[in-house]
Length: 314
Image (cartoon, rainbow, N blue to C red; front, side, top):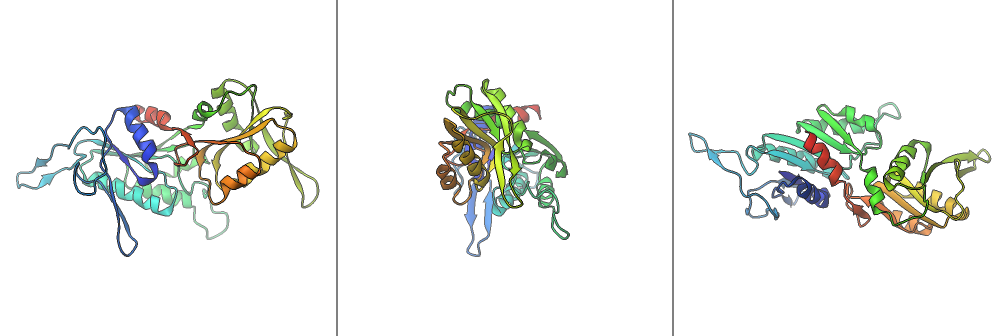
């Protein structure tokens, strides 16, 4: 049964459809002191979210003494789906893991479409935490296994204290793109070139390049494509995350200055914080295409197929 956090409702619904599994009812409430609680009530209970084509209330078995043995998830595998986009989302994930156990789940799997704090994967100065490790340990305590989607650093999977599979949703981005004649897929740096290669391979046409920084002086740096000319070509900027949009906007301006016919952006995780959309539009980005690992207007393709494949293998 699929258990959806508030941050991953569209993805959870798509995942339930892909696996032909019901969605568990989920209720959320906030207390006067600001505390939050997510729970998994019985189907039809007050506050329970609609479960769509759910299979119905799980059997409630009474023990010899008359106490309830199990709940709506009794004897079932629970798949908690929660993008940890905020600190509160991390708390919600932990609560839903625990609620699944309380509702009688025989097994808990946790899908983290967007793993927040993943970029804090080391202590950059003495006394700093390795936040990705701390979050992974916390999530590990309530789950039997975990799945994360296209993390910024795949090595963060090793921070989990349970088996953690990494799946890549980047190929899904190709399905979102319009018909383009010989497009140029560009990564913002050499480290992200593999993502651009992946999207280009899934698209089936075009070439791949990445940007490099060329220093003009002690304080001035030019961002330039590494190998390929861009004049007259449709360019697609590819990265795993677009957060503030600063890097993408800078790259888009370079492409526009060099005569690109069009500039689009594609990313797995559309965080798009603050004025990111305005920044990208001002730089000439015509459209942003993304998956639903972070649910935004730009989430035009779902990561559900690749997550479903991983869950079928479990």
